[in-house]
Length: 237
Length: 293
Image (cartoon, rainbow over all chains, first blue to last red; front, side):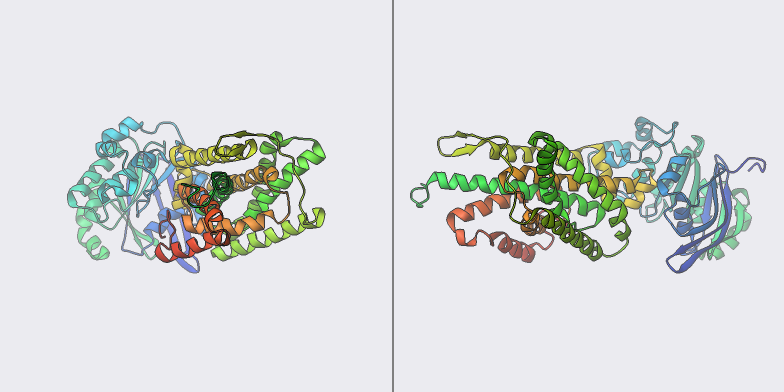
């Protein structure tokens, strides 16, 4: 990635707490416009917590998170969303009391330039077929599609995708990989949390390796082959 | 057939209408409680006092400002809702991260304070409020007083409109989603704390509106809320906490059941709702329309 470009997201010495337990110990990394970047690491390394901290869902956070130069530590989640960041949470967060269509239309448009509903349906035809179903009646894969689809309309430029491949059949994981590559082509910037680095290597430009709440290494995707053995050992796969 | 049972139709339909009126108040009050509980997770024990304040608001607007019933029907709920929103902003919002019990204790304490203040100022004997729609229609089988018919229709319209907004509109989809996952809805860019304040204001406004409607039908008294609210909580338990349609149907349904009990077995009329509550709790602990959390 060009070193002279200003990062879209710049995380510096980020600390985070859940109650009394100190989970993030000085996370530092950045994401440039148009990049797909992963946070790789084992369960409990602090990847999801980092996502929650960026979104403002983790209240006890210290350090610096700059988005397009704006400091967001201290902002409420709704203010952070309005800057152009959107999250697809690990548990997907599909609302049971809303239909598929209501789920899709729920996140308000925060900035111009998002996809139209028709463009979203082009990417996810299945969601149009099932638009009147209850949100949680969808299969796991469809719920994952819906969770990604609904944040594409909002005009958010930075998408936080938390383990979109988790618990899904290989063919659906491939489909989601294709969608992430499409999103990159459309100009979205993606921060991806993954444990599955084989999947991550098919979509990402760079990988940050996270352990015990800090970044311990950065591997560009074109160097992933020579680092594969080390990464596998590290992730314990 | 009625004569066979020894009950004149006048008495039957008269009680049925009274039951329907009570049901209208149960429905409006339990609807407000259900909306507030759904989003705030607070069991609003101040609800009865806010209903009473709605009635007193109408009385004060008339006697101090000369504003008649129809003006008070709009103004009093708005004023009481604003007072409610101030209470939410200054007191209730500090309790959301704590157990339900704290919200219950705070709102119960507030209810006692409000009731005490009104009793000190206006005594406990009750104040009259003139019927704005005197007269009635003879339907042949019964006499239908105009104001009672108005109360039933107005309450039905308000309940159905509330149901429609919550279940069928975009605004309602925010409310439903925030009831499930307020954090995620806020992370999509919606100002959930403001939504909570407005929702509390709306629920309180509904209680006050019921209070204004009750002023001409009953007396305006400081204890009118605490007498009613115990029954309304039983209605909410039977319908199931958090269900909108459940609150409406159970409210009207139990009002009618209570009215019919007055005809066929008057001795049980004040306890029948609690008997039903006990049975429902044994058979369906989450309530008729509720889902177990």
